[in-house]
Image (cartoon, rainbow, N blue to C red):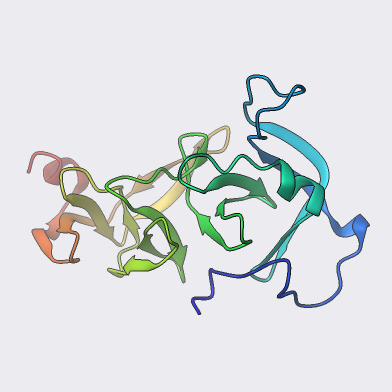
Length: 186
């Protein structure tokens, strides 16, 4: 089983006390209290450490899994997608939330490299690049040697490296040998 997938209700390492639960954020199910659900933040609802995510039963029941059977979730500085059966996938922070699924794939990081997963949380592509943008028109902009640098108020920018494009098989369709401004013209 991939290290990013875990069942946090039945598989759990160590003992977590109620006081170990920290804050979390998610979109709750539509109820009388939440007529127009938006991102809400709660205290004492989740725990994430050493690859283990545990969500309190109360908050697990409140998650809005949507039509795709996935809920966006945030705790301990990390965004996730969570399934009703407890499986979860840590994903990249993007545009004020969990990375979107584009062309059926979302991005995660493992050992500092970008990987692409499908909605079943199956690893689809692990191309070994330091960064990759979401797929658009069957290709993704990737870089080797680029680094994320802080810009302002929690935002980051990419700097340096060599850039190119890959297809969904991970093959370079524009060689990774250009600086960022040159590759965007390709």
